[in-house]
Every structure is written in C-alpha cells, then in structure tokens.
Image (cartoon, rainbow, N blue to C red; front, side, top):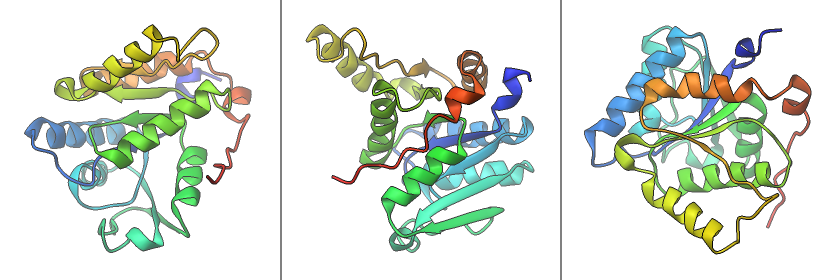
Length: 204
C-alpha cells in the first residue's frame, strides 16, 4: 500500500484565540482548505473560536471532514463547533487527548498558548519514550515557534536531550509545506509501528 495514502487524518493543535498576528488566522484557514482539498480529515479540539474555529470552518467550507473532540467542561468556554460531521464529547482532558492520538496519523502544531504547547510537548515526550512514531510537525508561522526551537537547542547543548532521546519535530515555515513534509516523514513509518500503541495517558 502506498505510504502516502496512510495520511488519512491529521490532528491539529492550535489556539482557542486568534493571536495578535493576522497571519495566524490566515494560515489556519489556508491549512483547512489544503486538508479538505486533499481529502484528509481534521482531528482537533472541537472549539469554534480562535484558530481552532478558523481551521474547522475552512475545512467544512471547502467540503472536507472534521472530527472535533472536546471535554464536557469546555463545551461552553470553547463554544463547541456544531458544523463538524463528528463531535465526540469526552469526560476529561485525558480521554480527549487519547482519542485525538488514536484518530490521527500525524500531529501539527499551529500557533497557540499553553494548551497547544502542552499537547505538542506531550506528543514529543511519548515519541521520545518510544511509544509512537507518528510524525509531529511545528508550523512555525512568522517565527512563532522560534523560542521553543531555541529551547530545544539549549536542552541539547546542556545534554538533557541526548543520543537515544531524540526530540525531532518536523519544522516548516508555511502551511503549504506541511503535507509534503508529513508525507515525507510517514514514508518511513510502517502501519505496524503506527498501530503499536494506544497510549493511555498516565495520570499524574
């Protein structure tokens, strides 16, 4: 089976606010259109505001498929997206994140806040620990993720990220580069490796 066909659903982490830079919303809309035009399902946090709303609206507007996964307590705060073909309401954040993981073939972080950062870093942590090999990509729109990339470099220099503990997110500077980069990355991941884990997030 052609590896490119394995990219059926992409999980996108992004802000529930629009951010101060208009390029952020514009990029979310553009990536939504790209997903729809390529027949790739959006899996995301289920909100209808900020970048989350922008990307989900764009996928639907361009005839694509959306799965929103939202915890019960956030339905009002993040204004649950009602246009999605599939909405899953979970009991808590742990179940939300587990389902987002299971439903996606790859993960993309657009600009966002602490929640976006936490989801991105959790996936990098699981990958570092060998729990999954799904590609993780940072969409570095207008240099948004530069400080995090610098922090990763600093961690490497200080030998907290060392040989055998690779943290290797794919970093691109525009949303047009996302799918080609993900397809390149998924080429080296077998179906078996992708299925190898259904991560149960350990509760702290």
